[in-house]
Length: 147
Image 1: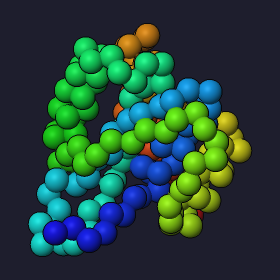
Image 2: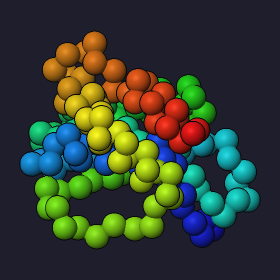
Image 3: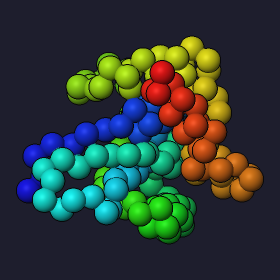
Image 4: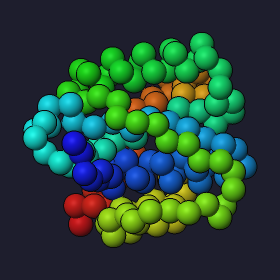
């Protein structure tokens, strides 16, 4: 049985950027983990997060399409959906313990207004040239935590 869940800075930063981009909206997304991890390990590491929606969180057809797309891409990278995140528009919700490099990277990204460049599925469905996988943010987050 899993005893611990670890969230990487990449996953954490993208969740916070999603909430920062839409502070007036409820948001949601999915969490991805390494499906090839050692099954005996008591740690599940959330390696990435995929922002889904900020307009209406309960549109079944859009959610089904988004989840199928995420699952297909995740499987091609050896990842799997581990869970779901959501945040309401309340600013005073509780948080849990986060790795220091995740908060440092998030602060730097927010200072640069990187939240304006985060793409969720609502953005993607408006213009399919917007990449919901956020490769530009992933590279920037990786660069920040490597310092």
